[in-house]
Image 1 (cartoon, rainbow, N blue to C red):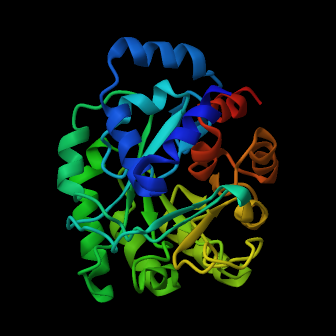
Image 2: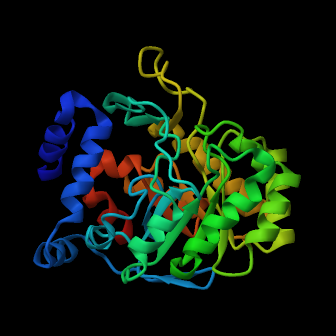
Image 3: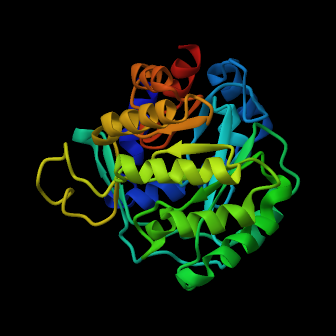
Length: 326
């Protein structure tokens, strides 16, 4: 009830501009005093420890990449109940992202479309900000800088990796965002093989895949992951599909769709990865988790951990607590 009222107010910020509300929220979370963080933690944090790819997580519910790209509010996420947080996606070069507006909500269908374009302050800036971080496990999502040509992608990712690897509980290799031209080509076998060959060897490396891939294409990604020693897969990123979204102004927006319309597809991809690998490659399930049952179904499909983004926007920290309890 309290969050419903807060959400209603947030959604009116900036005349309903979703990104303005996001920025306002991050500013407030980044300045919470220790006593407020302590109160939030007592209310929302539920211990449910699990060990996955060699990392101890205090509970299996994480914050997905994109919510706190530059790691400005890290102490708040653990206080709001999350067992881990993934920052980024960060790139080697600081970049402004795509023109605004670029973030759109559809409350009636519990959906979000974004075409942010990896707006971030750069890997070196993130490394400086998180150098003294101590809290729940920290994943760091890496992407390709827009100015970097595809043939130089490995070096671009490697520059980011070198800047942040000492502070990461795990590294997420984002090759599946639909909002950077050509990025999804890095999911192809030859590109991904070279990328993982360069990055695997320090903290656990996971590959984040698109929900729009065919089973054959996912199978090829999994084979490269096995060959190169990747620690796991994040399934899934946002989708270019508009299935489950009524035609109209929202559906016509360019960008990646997340939320309720992605629930079924995310579960199918998690199940396919789990079956294809015999459960040997851990999966972080993300996409369309709007209530505890959605998370339970992802766990039943084979996810070892789950992440929230759109569900957190619409349901708030009570959803984090409820999933951890379930």
